[in-house]
Length: 366
Ligand code: DAH
Image 1 (tube, rainbow, N blue to C red):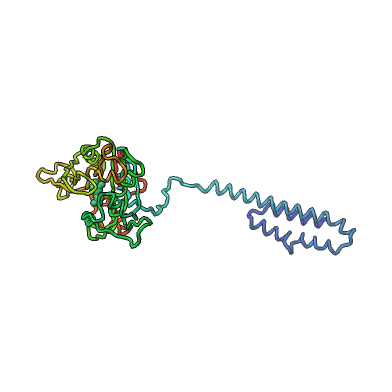
Image 2: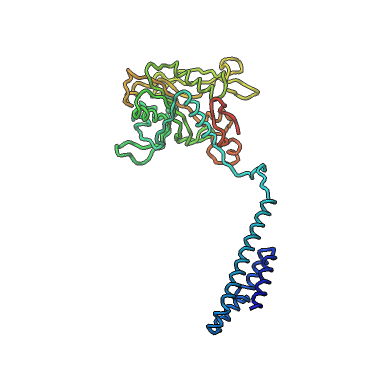
């Protein structure tokens, strides 16, 4: 009995003195492991007489419990001490720059579309959309280009082999103008919308790609005239190019869906051999650049879309978004827009945090 007492006291002293979790574990195995001395003593109980067992068992059991408790307490204490030590020694320097994570960039076309939406929102326009797979009626007929109209030949159209349920030929829209018809038919008048989006034509060289982007504009209200058209486009272009000296020239033109139709030219000037928009197009060293097609919406188009042309008038325009991006950000090959070359995008792309606003400027580079 005394021997048990002294082995136990020695074990408890060793446990209290152990200064690493590994040392405590070694002591646990020595006492309570399969071959440990307390485990062995417990086994001897099996071979004793009931009386003997009754007299010996309590002391052995309580020695086992005391040693097990001491081991658990010592492990906890050592772990707490280790944690305190780490908390005292390890510091986190929040001022260190975080590692640079790879970031994508916003494509110039997306950037310019955001800029357009932002500027026209300030002028009271909302953004409308329409399908890229369009029917013949919306893309041509309702825009005053009947089946046999020679103006259809102006567009190199991609047709689908099938027709829709109503027998309409289906095609990839050749311009954003069909959104005019859809907007008028859906919301009636008055209307102030822009419709940016993809359009398709069978055409490919340095300045033409089979897919490109346009932004359509449509204003329908009472007593709308060409003056409103000119002011709206001028105000837009001044904000977009961030120049107050933008001048426009309207030239008579022809589009089936407008009457009268105008081609809108913008003045440019030579600055160190570069054409920069702005200035007087007629002065020496200045010139005019054709920018977009526009006009007063043809009465027939209003009728096709379900509006009374004696009550409502309006103007519309169609403008190349890619072309705008090239002019504003100095890119020279349209095909690069759609090559998906990461180097080109890294050079010309925009930061996702570069939000265009009229007050903050729309052209700020990240
Ligand atoms: N849809 C024409 C095109 O793609 C552009 C255009 C011209 C749109 C005059 C218009 C407009 O809304 O009034 O060539």
